[in-house]
Amino acid sequence: MFEDELDKLERLNLLRSLKIIDTAQSSRVTINGREVILLSSNNYLGLANHPKLKKAAIEAVKEYGVGSGASRLISGNMRLHEELEERIARFKKTESALIFNSGYTANTGIIPAIVGEGDVIFSDELNHASIIDGCRLSKAEIKVYPHKDVNFLEDILKKENRTNKRLIITDSVFSMDGDIAPLLELYRIAERYSAMLMVDEAHATGVLGDSGRGAVEYLGLEGKRIIQMGTLSKALGCFGGYIAGEKNLIRYLVNRARSFIYTTSLPPSVVASAIAAFDVIEEDPSIIRRLWRNRRLYVEGLKNLDMDIGETETPIVPIMVSKPDEAVVFAESLFERGIYAPAIRPPTVPSGKSRIRTTITAEHTEEDIKEALSIIEEVIKGI
Ligand code: PMP
Image 1 (cartoon, protein in one colour):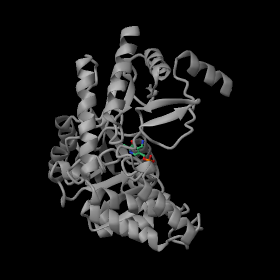
Image 2: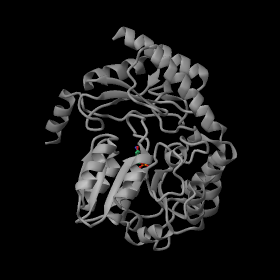
Image 3: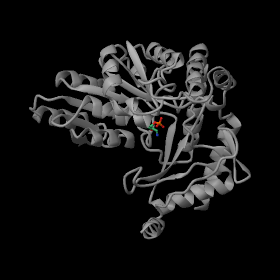
Image 4: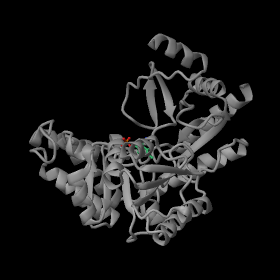
């Protein structure tokens, strides 16, 4: 049975396999014994191998060991977990925060806890899979609106006359396209129609806003009633997910979010390194400016090459290819010449929208970027 399914995926050029990285996450990594420019990591600020984060993890292992031993509500709630939550709330300027074991489990825990049968979710068509799964688990009715189409959203909300809970949910930076959600309009609509607004700041935290607080900071929406979810695994370089919001929401989730309640808490080393990540960003926000300088350089280069990079506004820069087989050939040619950026195909992106999802980080040097651009140019000329 599995063989048939795998053969089918292979025939459609949709079979995925794993590449093994032999070195630490950085702007260049070794794969199959070859050094390549890494152009697909979400380690936007280069913190995944940062000495301060590593030191914090090592010290936490020495003092607290490697495992937390139980879930938070049993005996796995260590002082470090509480400290990280205080840091997240302070960083996000919210009353309170709660950590989850990943961004994925945050979305699949939070959404079914705050809405359920009889409620309605309004979800952007390009929302991340973890949001989609959270929506499905909730048993609420799901109304998917066209990407960023606030007029469409308002129309369907207008027609919705049930009195039950409504939730508008969106990525703030869309993970495969790198564009930014119209949060101000979404916030106004949420207020007008008494809906909750939840944003997934996975690719915005540490990236958008002068201090890296995310799209909510970037768009001047701090202090508004917005449920902010995010991850510690991308720009913060570590692992884990979080939600930041009002105190009572957090207290409620401690009692109701199944992916929070029924799992062992994050290991102390991971938590300690995440705290150190906030230290680094707060002490030296210039790394965020470096990320944006690199992004400018890279995008200008791609535009000079006449590449179709969609509507990106962030360090996520898709190179649109369309068919899955073309995307695979493109990715292979890039790899042969020294860039690792895999093909992204359905079901991760809609059919006809296969692409190479490239990302730029603060760690890339000017030389890395120039070399990457010249490899991309060679590949497009050769295809
Ligand atoms: N939300 C979005 C928008 C994401 O891109 C991702 C990760 N790909 C997640 C949530 C899940 O986060 P994590 O990797 O921490 O599980």
